[in-house]
Image 1 (cartoon, one colour):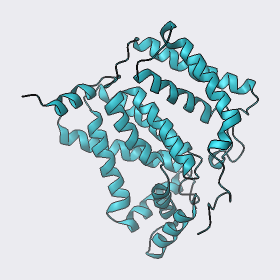
Image 2 (tube, rainbow over the protein chains, first blue to last red):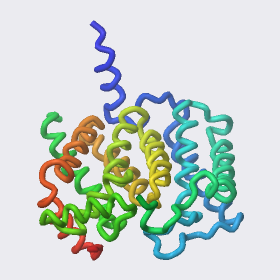
Image 3 (cartoon, rainbow over the protein chains, first blue to last red):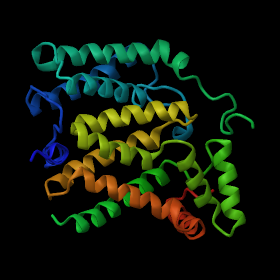
Image 4 (cartoon, rainbow over the protein chains, first blue to last red):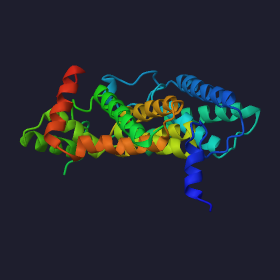
Length: 127
Length: 163
């Protein structure tokens, strides 16, 4: 009678942007909060003197920069808060600013401790 | 939309997405870790192309745009667009744990999220992209290493990323 799995997947996937998550704020506010968290993370990491671009060659650089890991971390952590429907006040803008600042601080001070660079450049560890 | 047609089109879209993103970010150019080099040289020994071999080895050894596309489809199925962005974040963590800078994986999952969002207006569902991505990886890794590596080497030459 109740095909729970089918119904769940059907409702989750019918062309919607929210899926199974119960986001209470409107999609315009979600978009605005994403833009705010990305901009705040980039600007605050520039204030902390993280370089804007990774060192050359860009495609093989392990260095952190303001453009590459910081907005990804900020947007990812903000998405986790969003799908748990914890948006704090002003439709998530305050939370977006806090997460942007914290992710810039994380990239500046803790990133190399949590994700250390590989020892031997391109080759990885010896067998 | 008919499921079979949707899966076929989604497989083509996923294949193009991950091959273009991975090739642009230089997977065929050099092996990121030692395991990728061993796989690439082994594929070349059997008559394949060294750039395609490095591509296949890099896909095996760390989560690149192929894994990013698959995880982004699963995240979109469960949580919508925020799920795709969470997938990019997790793929980035996985990349750094696998001694990989992680540009290809994060960009691949973000582009996959955008593709699924655009295609959802045409009646595609994220399940179709999950099945399509499994089929797309099967054509690269599962059926014939030699011919797949030669094809990937030709694509790498077009992008000026040959080893």
